[in-house]
Length: 274
Length: 274
Image 1 (cartoon, one colour):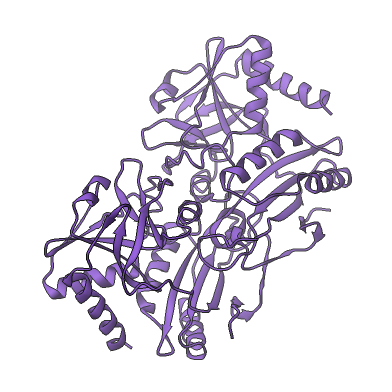
Image 2 (cartoon, chains in turn brown, green):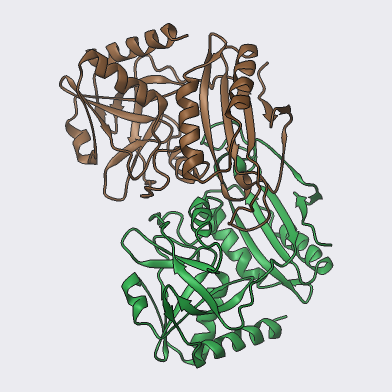
């Protein structure tokens, strides 16, 4: 099976009600994860972020039990693939204001693992012209308003595997589809996501692993200028794990021991927990 | 006919491909307009904004002739109703980066005119807690990333007919579904939309009418504090025309002569041009 498959509210199907608010306003949240050992990887963390998103958007009640069961069932049948989960506020009249009594639409889909560039030797990363706006109300959650990422991603054609996105004040926030870590000596730095960006599950995993290793990680604003003097850099997400950055704009970067060790431990922790 | 009707790429239908990027990322633009005298009102201006949006998002080529013909045909059959037009980047693989060769999806729908509150005596307007982020790349165009408006609109329950939204620096930008004009003596002020907000078609019409009347209109940042001392205020959009604001937060406002005259001339110009 190479194609994608979709389930809408538990039923197989490829067509959605055109009045759905996900389509009309981007009124929803989503998750993308790997199925490993026939299980949805780090499902608890993904469900936690989904739940935080639904709360932030004021969604009506959701049957989490049914969703969790459905995801486990689908994962059992689609090992090694990618699972995407969308929760939309559903179809509810016309206009920005949700109609009372709307019911959340859940869309689950299974996809092939995207073709990855050969990243064993690290990836090439640039800075995007497209910037992220500040929106603390939506920062952190993985909502469906993704035009900034689409525009940023369009800048990563050709030899650039990822692009870093700045906020209006020249802080680097994240990649177009990943979170960013910087290596400075034996310490880590990752940008604060209080005003923009998505709080990645793999980012949280890496923070936990670093803590267990006794490695300090600063979570703070990172001005773009800092990147000129940094010792190392990597990006991460649920599908790629860790990509070491070996070329940043015009500069070569080494894959340091710390990045290698984190890659190894992330992989081990994935296997151990399943 | 009270229900809504939909056409997808010219074919009647209520179901959209679930892989469509409008749904996955809010990757599209839209317009809402009135059908008056069996014609799409100010269609040229709406198409112009659609075109600007498609260019800003880097959409592939669009068959504007076919779209225009379709809109005229539908308007001829649905006088007095509301028309909504969505252009999406279409279905094109998974991931933020659009796949090459994607074709734009056009969704046209016809709806009943929304039930309007009795606004002859003016409307009650508050300031929303939800703010608009700065995003100059998306400012002005009417894209499908509308979570800010959804959250803002949810604050306008009950006795508030509209809510005004501030930017991060306490400037008032617009209403949740309208643009804002302030009356100061014999002059008008309307907020700049360079970093946030939608450049409304009715706003443009009012600016043109004011110019013809010899009335000066400042387009500039408007700090929220200014609203405490303003002589009058109105909001506008393509469906409501002009709503005079007679209650702003705790304060009563008169419907001045200028607002009344603009209402009258806007209505006349609508009739004259059709």
